[in-house]
Amino acid sequence: MCRRALGARTVLNAKLASVQEVRSLQVGPGGYPAPKAFPNAAPTGPAAWCWTGRPSDYVLFAVGSGGTKTRVEGLHGAVFTSPPAAGPAPIP
Image (cartoon, rainbow, N blue to C red):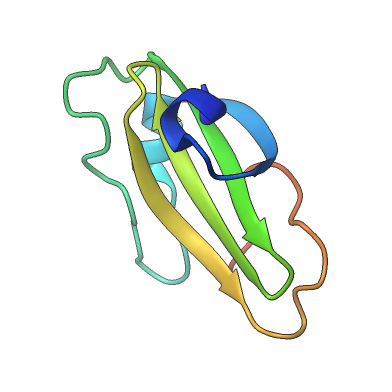
């Protein structure tokens, strides 16, 4: 799913999810980056978390089964020297 949706971007890792998991992801206090992701998909439909990027500049995308994508979050700065674990980053 990730390679199809993200094309030439290098996919560092991926994790399966549901559309509802993507829509309900909370980042920080009250931040929901993708509440309307994949509007034509059922909440139980398949999705995936896909990390791309390079040291100091990582980006998490959520992708849907139809090849659609939405940028969810990014990790930027000198402290991010290796790829994040698959799935959303634990941001309180």
